Length: 274
Image 1: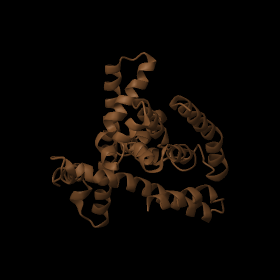
Image 2: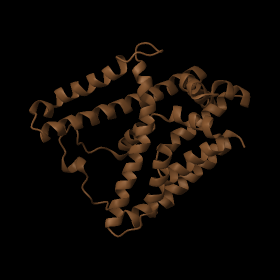
Image 3: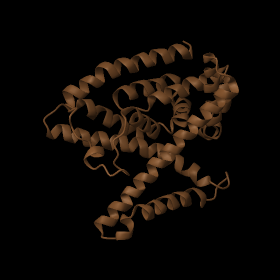
Image 4: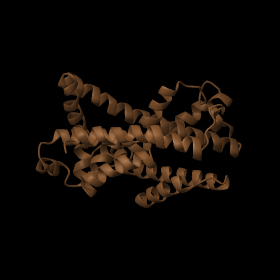
């Protein structure tokens, strides 16, 4: 089966899952209330809590959770093989997470780049090799796919490269913002007023992040710390998803609702992470 058919079938499954399974969870399990006032409206301060168009909000969520997909997708295929990787991406997206769309595109792009299994194995015979050339191959493969839409190859390469950089930048923005929130909360909790100020807490968050990237020494020279932190990003991402599902499961149990729809994905994600 060609990569195009795999992608088409997966997208159909995503659409069916979104239309029916997501609706079932929203109405029968979570019982979402469309009139509920979210924190963005309740605490609107024009800085951290700002009502936002749902399409923009979806874009932020997508880029925040999908930043590691160009690395994780091929890495899973290296370790497990293509069939388990596709099952992880498709079924994991349907029942446990939301970053599988980019991972699916990544796998299809990687398949497009290589003509034979031997070429693939020459670049992805180990995690080290996958990490060293994974992003470049993803850009090249995705650009080749884009040429099917009558986009010139060089223009497609530029567009895909910008998209990849945007994922990394958005992920960095999210992590720094969360670190600032933590510093603000510590300042309020322990009555350290300087930490409650936006500019100082932001400076501390940015400078500490930069130090973690620039100070450690490694084979890649300046910035080697980023390559050391990157694997931790994927692990913490999955661990956070598992803990979130755990909290939702407890909440559902206390409200007398079915927990099977969050308990099974929680066990699976935590098991795979640990």
